[in-house]
Amino acid sequence: MSARRKNQPSPQSALLRSPRMLLALIVGVAILVAALMAVLSQLGGAGGSSNSSEDVGKLYSGIPQNGTTLGKSGAPVTIYLYEDFQCPYCGQFSRQMFPRLVEDYVRGGQAKLISEPLTFLGPDSVEASKAALAAGEQNRYWPYYSLLFENQGEENSGYVSTSFLEGLAKQTPGLDVGKWDATRKENSLESELYEAQAKARSAGVNSTPTLIFSGPGGQETIAELRDYEQISQAIDQVDGA
Amino acid sequence: MAPSSKAAPRGGQRALRVGLGALAVVGLLISAYLTWVHYAAVAPVCVGGSGGCETVQTSSYATIFGVPVAVVGLVGYTGLLLSASLRGEVGVYLGFLVALVGTLFSAYLTYLEVFVIHAICEWCVASAALMVGALLCATFGVLHLAKEDQAGEK
Figure 1 (cartoon, rainbow over the protein chains, first blue to last red):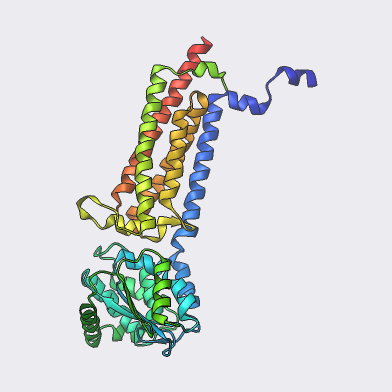
Figure 2: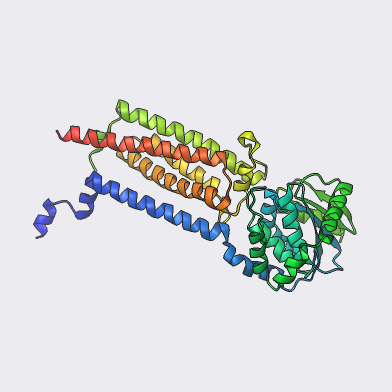
């Protein structure tokens, strides 16, 4: 038996000697690797809208919310966020840096955030902002804000539909959807948007996202946000502690 | 595997390797540009000023556990370039494997662009086309190798 084995190629080497078997092996490995990459992309990329509701609940848990203000009212640093809900870079900031900003500075009471929603990209920005402001009437602005950016589509593609906004409202923890739906049709929300635009004009804001930091040490503006370090430095400078 | 002497560089095989190498270099340039765009947080240049590139590059699918997809592209095109620089069967089969993985993953990314993100990034489409071209080169390389093997056996 052992003599016969010496004269015959092992099954493994026979596999590699056959071009067809080798090709089949390569195709199988390629499909497996590509499938694994796609699965990793789904798990580690999107996060999935199904988890968003739970995620935003955790992010804002225990932090005071009052309308469009997030954080303790006595926080020494105030950060004004000028954003458009359709702006891709605002979405990137919201998804990648915002949760860290909340955990590092807002939760501990060093800073509070005030959102100033802008609507320069188009009518869908108005509808998205009004939906968020309506949630703010129930002090649920910030979870809705996060959900809008988590589920952001291409600007002015029509993704901001009534069903889209209602879907996010249903995912917003603690939001009375019926009351929210009635509020978002009120004209008073439009005047809030005009106010935000007027503030942006007077502050010289001409791009989004723009972050304005105000505190005992003065004022700082970030109009071209590249990394989180810029935010940390600006807070340290205006905090003056 | 057949002895390496059978896979000595010949005209057709060399042309395919050069083609594969050229596609890999162009793909590396695109991936390097998109990697720079990601880390510099600047808007990618898009033909016609479309916002599709920005939407795709800033979407939550642009990274996998914090690693930009453009970096995955850099790794893939480096693998293709390496395979193009290798003579013989190892280079041909490595090129085929990398190009097939790249094409399948590019198909998945294109599906995301069209049906999930609802935006098209021209750089990503160009990269996907390069991967399909690389797969064609690699497939011809495998077929060429099979012909050489058959000729060698005769």
